[in-house]
Image (cartoon, protein in one colour):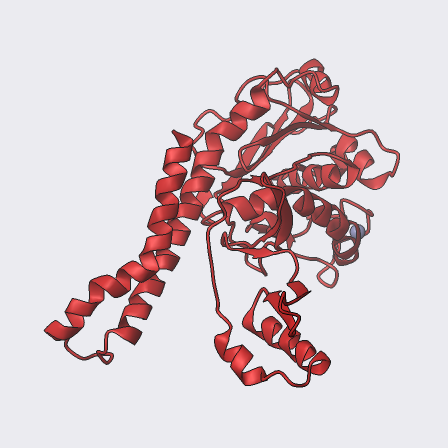
Length: 380
Ligand SMILES: [Zn+2]
């Protein structure tokens, strides 16, 4: 057995410095890990930098689809709405105002000031009210706190997503993923000259390009925004080529090597980042070196093709956030009912409880139902 060498620094990989490397970055929902690919020190340095660049670019999509990760959550992000407000979008679809609002105006009667406070949470409201107390010691803090209301509402505007793909750090993360799959499928890293050259040298030529000319995924599941990494080593054409697709919309072809002399190998790994479940996809990688080169030169992006790719997965994201919000609202409604209808947990519901139920349920469900109604009218 030959000792594997780190694909990035060529050091021998030993039991001491071997690491488990996510084939697709965990930050965007990847699960499977490979060993014997890069050493621990490379994993912690360049690997991390490239992956965070990629995760940052794709974060709007991670939030929109509500991906599940093994470690941590996709970070909240600030977006501008079509109405010009700034809102922070959180992973499970909830939104916060950008910053707390404070305004102070003298009363018309001249007998005092009116203060308005909007905070993102009750603790924040408390902190702000304590500030008011310091400025106006005569106010009754407890009375103010008792009168504070927690309100939530749906955003009727749309959020403006500004997506951009590319750049060398995110690009290297994509190439690294394809190389990791090649190595774990039995193609030695040393053979993948183009990929290694790009990963190891700051000035190395990029060996990937965007490809929307035709659909390389032969059994594309309708409306599922998947992640997929696929490689193929071909003895006859001497190529090791790869395909990486994220969220159904970022589609990249790569040439890892054009001097391959090993046996024919192909391998594909794909998952649904919303559920984390693995998918079984068939990717057809029969591209000539010329076609791949054209992709490097942005010549494989026909007009409207990127928009088409988005159109196919956006409904899935809308549905996922609808389902999540529906579940959240329903479970909150049930909790609210039990807290307010007078029955104790585990007790039989009596007619007087049941009479109260509909009203209490509607209190919680109404904003959701009205929002869905106005959204569907807007769409029409
Ligand atoms: Zn290394």
